[in-house]
Image (cartoon, rainbow, N blue to C red; front, side):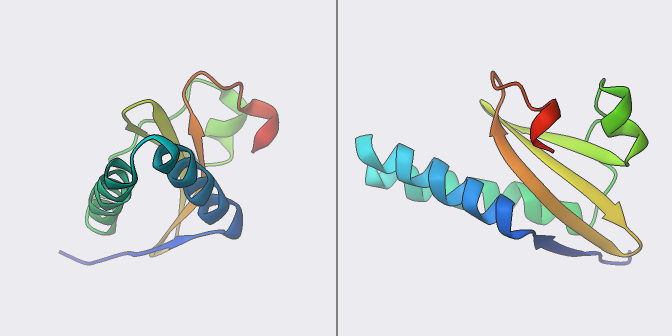
Amino acid sequence: MKRYSVSYVRRAEQDLTEIADYIKRDSPKNSAVWLETVDKILGRLAFFPYSGVIPKDKYLASLGYRIVVLGEYLVFYCVRGRKVEIRRVLHGRRRYGFLL
């Protein structure tokens, strides 16, 4: 099985930092556990890059976006060649079309 590289654009890294900081306010331990879970689940994209669902939003789908659900959060990513690019990590209740 060929492995894809997984990378985060700067905005996705900022999203993760902001979410972790928010969780850390209530529980530093839960923040660390959440980041470990994110790393583990998104690391699987290296082997299964097309495992995320295609968004219902036709525009995002046409751009090649896929979504992985992480509890209350949605991870938006694209597969380009042999590379998985994590673009955004947003709360599921947030309106996201204009953010991507």
